Image (tube, rainbow, N blue to C red):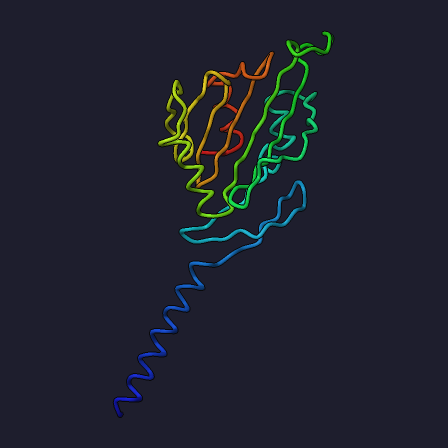
Length: 194
C-alpha cells in the first residue's frame, strides 16, 4: 500500500473518531413531564445544561403532601429576571393553617421554589459563584443536598446548587421567611433535589 493511501485512511479514522466523540458528548433526549404533557429537549454528556421549570418539580401532589389537601397554587407574575444565560421560574402553593380561621398572613402556610436554571456555561458559573465567592454572610452550610447548599436564616430559605442550577426552597408556616432548615429540607427531599 502506498504512503498516500495510508495517510488518507489514517485521516479518515481520525476525523471519524472526532465526529463520534462530538456526537456522543452532545447527545440529547426528549423528556416529557407526565403532569403537564410538556416535552423538553435535554442535553446529555459532561457539560449538559438542564433546563428546569419550578412548577415541573413543585407539583400539586408534593404541595398537598406538605400543606394538606387545601394547597392552592398561587398566581405569580411572569419573571423579569431571566437573561440570555439564566432562566428564572418560580412556583408557590399556599393553604390556611386553620381552615375555620380568618384569611390572613399569620394563618397561612406555604411552599415555594425559585429556580435559576442555567442556559449557558456563563449562567452555570454565575449560579456556582453564589455558593462560593458571592455566598452571603451569616448563612449555614448544609451537607448532603445537591452539589452545595446553604440555609439563609434571614429569609428562611434553603439554597441548593445542583448541576449548575440554583434552587431556592422555602417551606413556612405564618409569614413568608419563617421557614426553618428542617422544614425546608423536608420540601427539598420531596422535590428530590439531592
